Amino acid sequence: MTRVYLDYNATTPLRAEARAAMEQAMDVLGNPSSVHAEGRAAKAIVETARRQLSEATGASGADIVFTSGATEAAALALKDQGYLCAGVEHDCITAWASAALHADENGFVRAEDPKNTSLQQVNSETGVIHDLPEGLALSDAVQAFGKIPYGFSWSGAERAILSAHKFGGPKGVGALVIRQGLDVAAQMRGGGQEMGRRSGTENVIGIAGMGAAAEAAARDVDAGRWDAVAELRDWLEAAISDAAEDIQIFGQGVKRLPNTSYFAVTGWKGETQVMQMDLAGFAVSAGSACSSGKVKASKTLKAMGVDEDTAASALRVSLGLETTRDEVERFARTWIEHYRRFKARAA
Image (cartoon, rainbow, N blue to C red):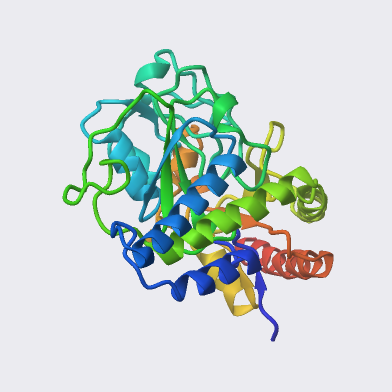
């Protein structure tokens, strides 16, 4: 059985460009903080990646702080700040910001006080895209960059978090982008690396992969490669909607990522569907990868006002540039077969 991967919002395959950059970095001996030739060679790799990421994300003039991932970047930006957010945000945001803001039925949030608010650019479950207010304290741009046109300089945010493995880079490396003239209080203290904001020897190999992946991801967006993915997603939604009149597709009527479909048939548990699809050879999820294994209703959907039973019945399918029409058709046929069995049992 050839497996089909349809969980690109959880993580993406390592890009060839990232792999090549990482392999090259493996042969560089020095510590980037050392002043000798070997150290300078390692430092050059880090700074090349910083430039690549800056150019790819439209962050010219901003500071880029490399971290172990988006979760650490969020903590660096949010800890002890007392910011507000909504319940649709990722757990790494709600861990530090108060989820006191209201989200409407599509997950949109109105930030009355942007300078004290963290607001996602894109929701990782529904794929719904936000228009950010000017002067926003922090934006989670993890799902946005690499799938839609993105520019930090025009996003409206003062700071943004990024994660390499969401756009073809390695796992375990991310970044906090900070508008020039602003600062954050260091949480990792020690040797003063990353402009004093994040101490600890840099992950040179991972950073090299992140920079190369960002460059390639931006090229794909500029080339319009995600348009074909959107067509596959729309075909999938039409196919399963024709077979399941009681299906609910979240965010279908508003701007979404081109690759994301999040839907529910009330009473057919999302975790059950994930296991059924896994046994049939398809990798999908019940929501965010950080929380979907915890067998509970989607907190994103609940924050949007969706009832508990429906929120616990959601399934997320997220496509990638490598996804083929045949794979989507095979998934649709399999899902529809299981849907009909579910309805027969429920009758």
